[in-house]
Image (cartoon, rainbow, N blue to C red):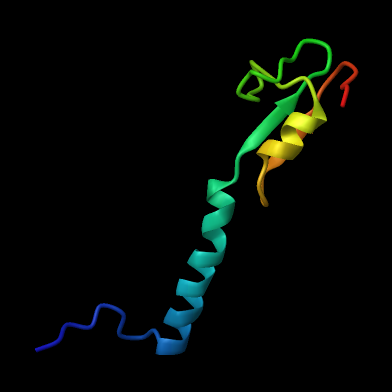
Length: 77
């Protein structure tokens, strides 16, 4: 005897929901980084409290979906 949990949901709806969760997963894994040319250091982790100094560091570290915020100061390359 099979128990149907989703009695009123069609297979097509279930497929769309599954695909939606798979597409949303990379956004949940996206990282946020910070650059502050005045007080940052490229050996920092790129957090708001310990930002990077250069855009170059972000360029070689980030992957698709990541976000970087440029804060105060002058960032060298």
